[in-house]
Amino acid sequence: MTAELAELHEPADPAHSIETPSGKGRNAENFPVGSFLIRRDLRQHVHAFYRFARNADDIADNPALSPADKVCRLDRMAAILDGAPGGDSPSATAMRESLAQTRTTAQHCHDVLHAFRLDATKLRYHDWNDLMAYCRYSASPVGRQLLDLHRESRETWPASDALCSALQVLNHLQDCADDYRALDRVYVPMTDLEAEGIGVETLGAKAACPRLRRVLHNMLDRTDALVATAHGLAPRVVSPGLRWECAAIVELATRLARRLRRYDPLADRVRLQKSDFMAAFVVGVLQGFRR
Image (cartoon, rainbow, N blue to C red; front, top):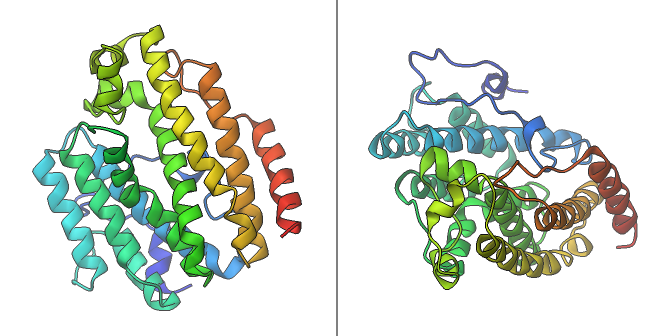
């Protein structure tokens, strides 16, 4: 590992860093991040991308920063990614070194930065298409980066985009109450709420009313359609470990969507259980062998 990639494990001086880490790690995520299924030589680069995206996300979600300050910090990360000198964004410096080593495009990194600029300045989404346009930048680049690292065909992108968008929406549904209460940010489409005759304030209740439940279930219906498309991803992936991981993640998405239909995300955060991860791993391996 190079000295710059080693910075992934060495936090910068808080007085000089533009990053505002939340402390959230890979173990807190719903889905595997650079798991043991990924090729060993690529894991550090998956982790570099994860930390880059995580730190940018933390900037966008920091309630103590103004929208203009958030955008300025994200722009600084982009500049360092593209070669600007300075050590005030260690994750961008490490990401730049990772891209140089793997010879992958920086576009996926710039795409997620675009999404986090939207998070800093945009609080509402008009309809489903508007939300999917956001997911194109917030979610799809994650899958594309992983596929490019493995030198997979870009014919895998449509199914990967569908999976990543589904995962993003599921995360939005998990966090819909917290996003509204803490950040006044709402990813539930305004047209869906209006169709039921309710407003964003219903997300601040202690439990979802029947009309809000219908809105959330309608979003899950469309998410299920994305997951159905995502089932075509694993059979197209050549790398065995990545193929197994893709199949496992599709299964986890299916299970999380099922839990969100059953439980109320306003009353408590709906989470996957250890049994879900174990079952998804088995499904992933079995489906991976059937390519």
